[in-house]
Length: 254
Image (cartoon, rainbow, N blue to C red; front, side, top):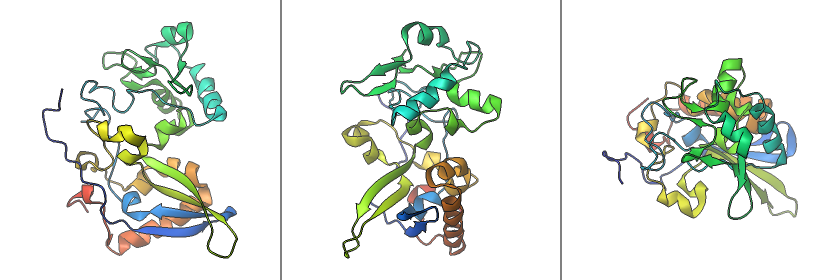
């Protein structure tokens, strides 16, 4: 099965502009941030034109495979919110409590269970309680940020935080914390097999605000409040300079 329309995805390998600055809260870390991505106009278009990462599951967005947990704390945090969900907001509530809402993948890693072709927390379009992630909807309904209720990988995508130990040459080391775009490559070898992907797709670069503003809560969680405020300063300077190295998926958008 293929999509009935062409996918307007730009090729990777285009120039990017980065900024580096010390983590205000940790002298052993240096942030390396992709200004090209963070000032782009990407936004999640789930329910507003997203055809899903697989053509065979157009309503599931990127929730088709379920979500792996980053660590035990991630699982415990999500588990606490699962207990708060009721059948009016979680379509597969009874199934999840009866048969479990987690499973192990082929490598033994813990993840959310896949049921009916998607993550068990994915509500179908016909569900009276609302279409999409039950954990996300619960956060919105209770006035809290969605990143506090969902698995780490879910709320971070398509932001990507990675760590690298750097030796500047004098024998000392520091941790480089990269903040950038979670491209297809971030999915590993399977990334090339996705039928559609949003981060470098012009269809998803339609936000009124750039990523660094629209994803304030997520970036603050990833960088800390002080780190985020410094990032904003660098992003605003980059924008004021006319975004000299823009994200090509933005096309002609300002």
